[in-house]
Length: 104
Image (cartoon, rainbow, N blue to C red; front, side):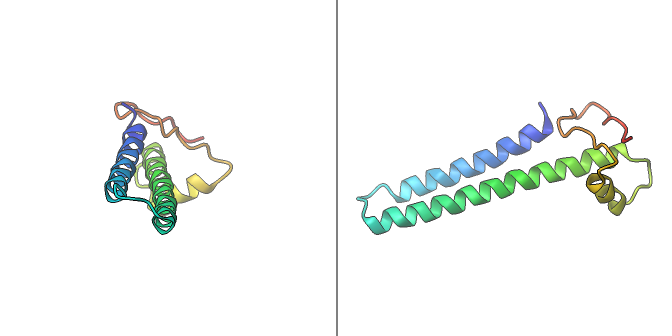
């Protein structure tokens, strides 16, 4: 399975577990205050999910870019390759048993 998809599914699972926890806490009678607190908590959960998904994507992009660069490239070289509009980075969907295509 695509390693990025595995990371993203892990993020979704953590988010779902958080939702189950919120649901269990909110099992009692609802008041306006409780509903507002739940909405605020849900907003924070969605924010943390988005952040987790973005970080997983960034880590995967950094890994496949580093693998495509020549041996001896530094972390700064990897970051430059990702930010440069002149360099095409490898796909984050590159399978674990495939070599990321070379950066042009």
